[in-house]
Image (cartoon, rainbow over all chains, first blue to last red):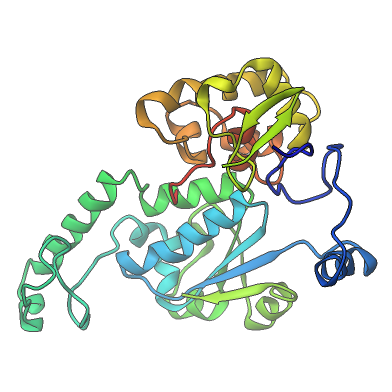
Length: 200
Length: 105
């Protein structure tokens, strides 16, 4: 049994829990170093969502949501096809196609070969999309719109890419409400200063 | 699994410090845990969330994620970030004497 309570790391300054004396040696030096140089900078993450397929919509959204839950300042920049995630007329109709996906296999029967050409048949994309939506639903994963709602409610920031906005011929009314602004590449570079940038 | 002294009694925790025995928790202990998690005062609103987490756990054997607290518990997501600032999911599960949530969403 230890006398000093073992407390998870909640970030920020520790509560008034009694602390053990710092261990001696190299580890003690390493632990003392950040304190000597002042408070460590708060973490910041920027996700670049560049794809508009249903399957590729989720990685950025799920990681951004997780980052917010960890108290990380979080931004998502929607660019190119990723802009479909925050465009009202497309965001609820993202599709999952097996075409061009060489990793394609059935979740339960990974060894069964699936010819790529099959994906080109009419109706197949509708079927694979439906199947993926059902699978996500079973795991209680929210829809893209709901994920965005959660991210905004959790304090996340959503940004649209100016060039994609212009290329798609969109107006502000076409955008999902949670988008704070449509910004240029230069704005994005400024925004991402000091952040961990993750391209999806 | 280590045992640690919290609130003057021995409590089983995992290596990270989360409680591992559902039965060792009571509301007095919750108050002490809240202090450790940096939540100085537990208001009625805090307790509603904590009681929801406690009630939700036994059947599922898994701590509710933030999303579940909001969607099933009916709590406002924004407010959860105000009540348990910084790392809400970890803080609320710790104070409720439960493991940290495993779910991705």
